[in-house]
Length: 122
Image (tube, rainbow, N blue to C red):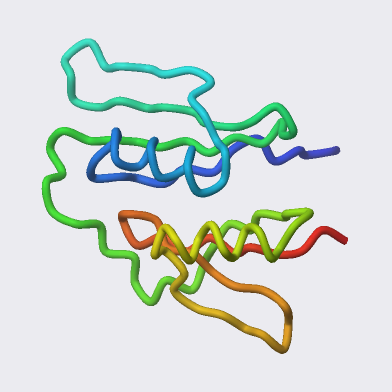
């Protein structure tokens, strides 16, 4: 039996703000969306041409409070071929939240507090 990862869900409080962040920060754009008939949720899948893996951003109408992310000990990693350019870009965006220079990696934080790891291409 084989399994393939296809998407990961993040619940977001402001869908437009999150879509803008993910496009600007890591180049992900909307692939498709599902809107509940009663308007109670919107699900947007985002990706780019280099990936088959998608992020699922879910907005829930009846969840106005910020999401409790616990200790935020989870993350999604993104690989880049140009760490210096990526770091400069994220520094300009003001979204770098943690750097591990010894490991050569850093983390950025999305508008809802989710951490994304930025790693160099292997």
